[in-house]
Length: 156
Image 1 (cartoon, rainbow, N blue to C red):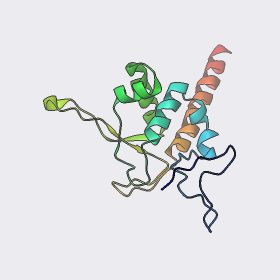
Image 2: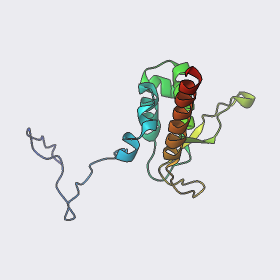
Image 3: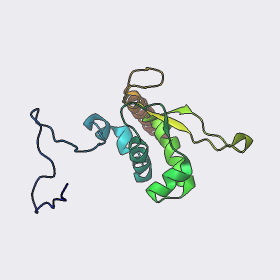
């Protein structure tokens, strides 16, 4: 088979009858309701980068077993391992990630933690995808209002 070089602007693959490209590759979908949420806006840029690196491991069949060590995430995001650990903790607390299995160093066997993206269905347990981060947004907003109002009433 001859190698064929593409001209600038030439399509790399032909369109199928259903309108999709052949061999376009995988992609990561972040819904707008996540990107527009106060929980997302409250995340640090490091936490967002860590979430994207964990989500890159998702292939629609492995949610709940997305293995990622803090050291690997730190190297992929080019941040310190302690910063990556704080970012993972922030993602779990804000509801974007759940820890499916804790990582460990027991018996000299290294085992990376396994995560689940909360907005997709879990392939391990069958648990439906949730918008847990939305519920936490409301709670965080209510707490912020409570503290703000409480501080005003004490000051008055």
